[in-house]
Length: 340
Image (cartoon, rainbow, N blue to C red):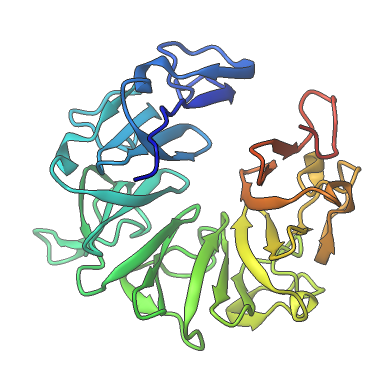
């Protein structure tokens, strides 16, 4: 049996909504330990713009931060919670993966069952519209208690966008619901719809309004909003159906990540590629403004053995095999290149 090592959760950045989990609302410009999680064996962390969650090895789910739309899953609703606490509605359920969207959350358990909670005005929690007394139907605005969604699907992975949701099934198919385009551009859908043209999908990643899917044969597909070239198609035309990201065709991809309006991919050789919106230096090319409509290698990470990439709204992070972490962003004018 492999030895068990204690885990420590570190947090830094904006804390105005309690999203750092340090029992306060101050921002931190360097990493601090989240003391409330020290007694638990945390296996995964998900950070949103205003709230955060932690998954323990035993399947317990903790959330903290902004809660005005029920995004923490802690009834009765409170505006903010600055210390992690378990989601009691999921007690006894072993959560294995979760995602945070604009103001809703998704989770999947070890039996392939998906759950959703938080904002639902665009159908992003997958709840059917309620019939009103006058015969019309309306969606519940907020769902503060986690409930089952996509009940007919055997889910492997969940991903949450600004106002839409995407899931990957055990069969390798991709399904989506909610408002997949900026509000007002297309009618919301609260019932899961299968994304046509995708088979044998290995993993998915979702930005604010764009989506990525990596298939088992290493092909990357993209669809959705594209105003900054975040689809990697060489233009800024949106795509309602998946399109092959040609610039990565000859590479062996092992990981993908989508930020608010940018995308990244990782090759088997540990090389990182980035594209989309470049403001704030989130692409890691050494400038803080230029957007790129096709994938380009982040040469400033050359020689580093990267094993995982992750994206936030305006920054990106890369993890090396020996446990070092590089961030690509511009914080108060300090840097726009990858730094450890």
